[in-house]
Image (tube, rainbow, N blue to C red; front, side):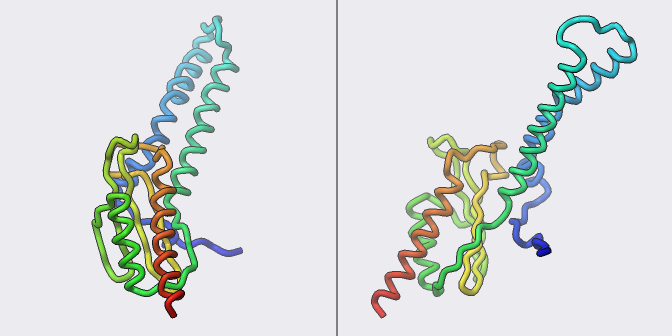
Length: 182
């Protein structure tokens, strides 16, 4: 059995993690209220109207299921996508510059093996994204999530996929251009 490393996920601050997963506790509020009502009704044995006790429990279970699905979906969004591609520093820099111009990325942190960028809110219905790129020999690890420093959002309206696809397309164009010349 191969164990996945924590390094396969982007690192967020505690505050960012809180906002990234904030939908989960919100989905747990209705079942908590339902279960409190259910226990009090069960103890008093005064509950005689619609919905039935079984229907109340099923309602709570639906919300608990949605919370679990949301938790695992948000957790999966933190994983890097890994692309095997041959590139050099110049090709990487050109692809990054092209993507920044195309998608209006702002570089937040830039190191030799690591770039973090942000795409901020505009009229595209997204509150913005946080893009993280790790450079490894012959590989790119990239992740784009809804900006955990902005208003909480679980829907990027396709922007997370678009960020990754555009950068990788630009990097592929750069690497093919140089290999065609040689």
